[in-house]
Structure formats: structure tokens, C-alpha cells
Length: 224
Image (cartoon, rainbow, N blue to C red):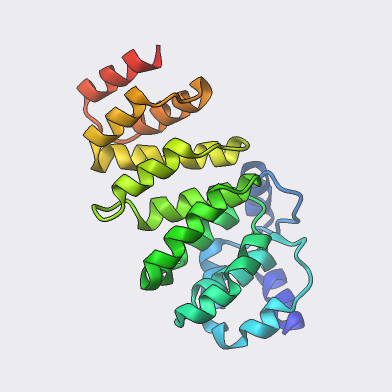
């Protein structure tokens, strides 16, 4: 299996995309520049080979980690997915691995109670990307009427650790603002948010075309 994966990557590597991606993804991994849809297609075709894929030991290559994560995300049995989840967390060393894996893990919806608890545990970790994974899980699957109040409780009590967890929190709050503006305004007004993180949050909210000009004016006031 390892030889098949390496041959596949070498066939699809793209030097131009490698250079571009390396600037965006701040990581020590080797980036070959294989495009994500190509990696996802390979993973979907090799889900049954998952154990062989996970045994490949070249985790210094970005695309190998992404293939592993995509393959896990394509599992159809939620218990099997859960059995591989902690291993997945250990593979994630940058925002691209994190966001691609979690957003493709639609299987999370099959046991939302379990993964809600898992997101809280990850956010309470000291590791920057563990926290990001937790925030992205909330963003992807829990911005809903059933969970919104609990999500606000989590973010009010959470402590970020590093730029990428802070940006994930900002992204989460911006999504909450669009869907639950009144609740989010209360959070922004009442909570003691670090000024640098508040600026990130406001910038992300302003980026949304679904935020009115009057709301943007309100955001300017609380930013200053």
C-alpha cells in the first residue's frame, strides 16, 4: 500500500501548488502540492484499505497525513470512526489538516452528544491545534437551536492558545453572529474578551456579506 500511495502522490504532485500551499500552511511537513480534491478522491476509493494506509509511516509528508484523515472521515460506521478519532487528532499540525478533516467528517452527526463532549475536552487542552479542532467541530455541527446556548457557555469559559486557535474561535463567533445576532451581541458586550481576539472576531464578522451596515457600525463602537 505504501508504494501505491507514494506513486500516486508523485504522479499528482504540483510544484506550483506546492510553493503556494507552503506559504499558506505554516508547518514543517513536506508539501508536494497534490490538490485536496485529488487526495479526497483517492481516500474515498481506498476506505477498505484504511488499516494499511494508517500504517504508512511517512507522516512528515503533508499529503500522507491528509489521505489518512480523509480516509478516516469517509468511514460509515460511527463507532469505527470514534476508534480512530484520537489518532486523527495526533496527526493534525496545521489549520488545513484540521479544517479539511473535520468539515468532511459528516459522520459526527451520527453521535452529536459524544462529539459535543469531545469538542469540550479538546478546547480544554493546552495544545493550539487541539483547541482549533474543538472549535471547528462546534462551528461545523453545533451552531443550531439545540446547542447554541451551550456553545456560548463553552466559548465564554474557554482560553485560547496560539494564533490558530484564536482564529478558529473568531470564525466560530462570526458564524454565530450571522445566525444568532442578538445572542452574539450579548456575548460580545458582556464578556471580557482579550482585545486582540476581539479584533479578530470583528474582522471575521465584517467579512460576511450577510452582516448589515448598521451592525458593522455597532461593531466599530465596541472595538474602540
